[in-house]
Image 1 (cartoon, one colour):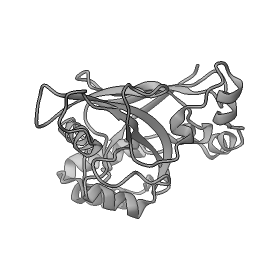
Image 2: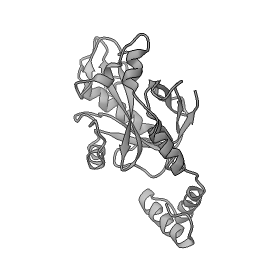
Image 3: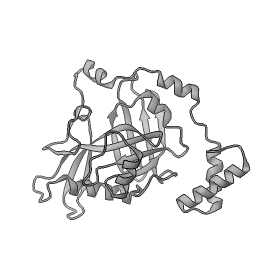
Image 4: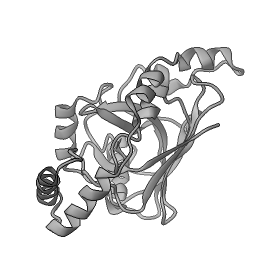
Amino acid sequence: MPKHTHTARKEAARELADDEGLGYAEARRIIERWAAHQPPTSEELEAADEVSYDPVLHYAMTPPSEIPGWMMRTIDFPMRVESPSPYCYAHRVQSLSDREQHAVLSLFARPAIYDSEAALVVEPFTFTPPADTRIPRYGHWGNCWTVELHDAGFRYNRVSHLAAPGWSATITRGPEPSAPCRLRVAHDDGYVLFDEDTPLPPDWLARTGVHPEGVPVFCGPGAGLPVPPQLDKEEADLMLETADLIVARIPFTVREA
């Protein structure tokens, strides 16, 4: 974002106002705040790029020497299981058609790149519906999950330039670069999307501070299409339009171990 000329900031404010449905004065205040933002330096990014990172080896060499199943997954769509999967965050989802029914989504989080910026994908590895449910398939529960997130401020149609109100994410680094980090993504009303250990590469961690409003966090699949391993912008944008993905930009704080 241009920082140094009055004209550039006016143009940026007009574009932001148009994109986000804001008044010009509010958009101009945001642009001025963005201009004061201090992103990571090129030296910091280059140093992070040089750090060795091998989470699979770390898990294999660290007792109990188990590699999380989601890291080695061979299927792209959540499987039904009888109990929540290990190394995942057990997230409880209420049915929209029967408020007495709940399922548990075993969520994992993985780093991604969306349109040249750091992004995060949160998706279920498996799901555990109630034993007596008449709705055993994932599609129902995935839809319930994304509707729940929409009610909490996530968007279907596109990635916003602005942070979703009330949301924040905290990362506590592991004891060494390849060790898993603790990641918590939550709303200030008490809703927790994710709170579990997950491996996050140093170069990705360094880039969470590039955008002044935070990192796009994508969740899905909402129903039919699996989340692609690589988050190609065109494909991701299409999946947002079809409600297979939902997204919110969330500010990240990275803490040392």
